[in-house]
Image (cartoon, rainbow, N blue to C red; front, side, top):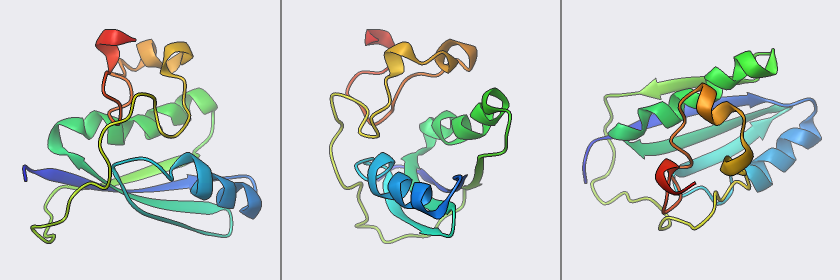
Length: 126
C-alpha cells in the first residue's frame, strides 16, 4: 500500500437532524470514508486517501469562502501508523457516491477541482 493521508473533517449543520441526515446519506458510500458520526449538529468524518489526493481533502475548506460561513474544518494527518492490511472499502464508482453533480458545480473551475476522486473518471471526462 502506498502512502496515505488521513483527514478528520467536521461539518457544522443547522440542526442535529440535518447532521444525522448528512451522516447517513451524503458520506455513507464514499470509498475513502473510514468512519463518521455526529454530536449535536456537528458531523465528524474520517477519510483515508492516497497522498496525491491532498487537494480533495483541502477542497471543503475552500468552499467556506463560497458559502460565506465556516461550515467545514479539515485536519490532515500526514504521519500515520495503521494496520498494514487496512484497505479502502469499495472500488471506484461511475458517479460521485455522495450524490454531487460535478458537471454543474460552479466551484469546480474556481478551485481547479479535478472532480470526485471516488469516481472512475475525473476532470478529463466531465
